[in-house]
Length: 224
Image 1: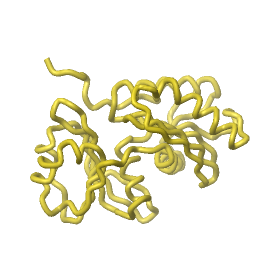
Image 2 (image 1 turned 60 degrees about the vertical axis):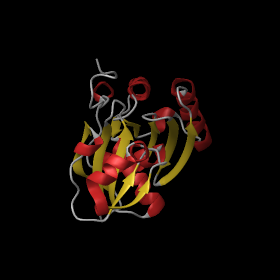
Image 3 (image 1 turned 120 degrees about the vertical axis):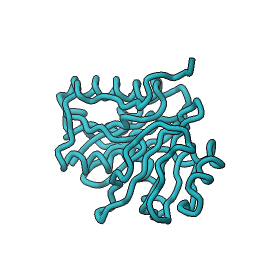
């Protein structure tokens, strides 16, 4: 299987070419520069892989939650590329990609992922790694104050994402010894979006370009 995946849901910007299980990724911390960098990353990945866009089986993107602007950029890019090349799209949760990355980097299997959603809230999701090494949803994604995050099942769990840095006191007070280790400096990466997308494609989760939609969880960016 061949696909291009990217994620711009946080300050990180990344793109990955997935070819039959091999993944080649470009990753950059690029706050407010996603629009300038993303398509260049896609072009570079295809060039390095010696492929044309039309030779791919699908496209994939981090559909959120996360930065409103970043998610809009990724959605616009994937829709334009998919329309132009007549390719299906596999939307992937950015929180699930973060959990997948934690598993790949640290071998953990029960992950509580949290982004800073501003306004005293987190984007939250809990995931468990299945027997095939894929992150599966354990708790439905939501936006909530850190102290209202859904209680986790029996320990141990691993906290991942910047939400654990910004709201560490509240989250640790909420979960106590259910949380073992915390990796607050991890970000969702395109290589993990690609792995989840390949699995999703096999499971029939690809959609048409017009159905490749963002997931914001919240419909406002400021509190009035």
